[in-house]
Length: 333
Image (tube, rainbow, N blue to C red):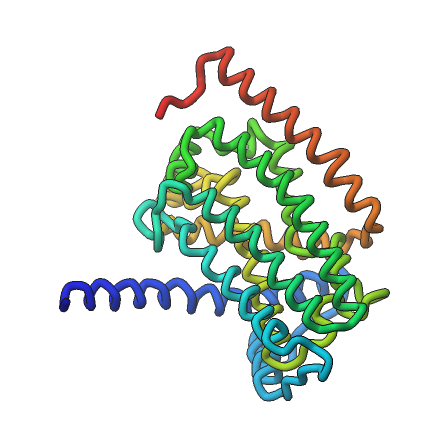
């Protein structure tokens, strides 16, 4: 009994050790997001609350905590309340299998990629629940858009991941990183990295694919009727998903925690720090796209996903498999 209790306490400690830095990181990347937009647009951005505006996210969080939560009279109250909880929970539990180093991972399971793909696919349910339960036309339209958009681009992401799995022969995320010790997959699979990056923008509803929110025509889309801490939970889930996609890109194509140069003093940098730096690099690219690229029309979004990305990624799977088979490079596990 005591041994089981000790194991439970250890696991809870590990979960908090992972969740607290992630929640802190979400607050900090919101600040970084705003600073990047300001840099592109030649303005200052957050610069009042705290040094360099670093406490702006904390001020925003306090504002959400103390704002009144209003539930529309015609809404389905149970589902309306559950929707942001589902969104945030799914975004956070995905991090359980992300390896920050060879020994630093909460759950080093052999089907890590399948776990990530399954949990991220469920994320659309929180948005659909929120849009439908609001019983309002703008949130409902936003939820329908989100469902179609996220399902469409999950297909492309899944096919892209197959290219990586063909090169590794394992669904374990640690194995995928270790397979890149000599050559990062971004080099042989560069077109797939580009398609993965653009698909990740669409999957996380980031500009130029922020059509489920679309302030111009849908006010705020599926979030229109939400306020206070319930709105903040959608916001936390969205940014946690963005960080998750950046971490997946880093692990699948940029060598995860591996150093880019195996020479002194680069070898002195702790392994988790390399992964964090790569995640930050991809996130800055996410922010630059938001500041620079105009929004797509919805028909353009669907055409890009189904008529361009899906055929290209399927063709690349065939090319990758053929190359590995012809040169007898297929991994044997």
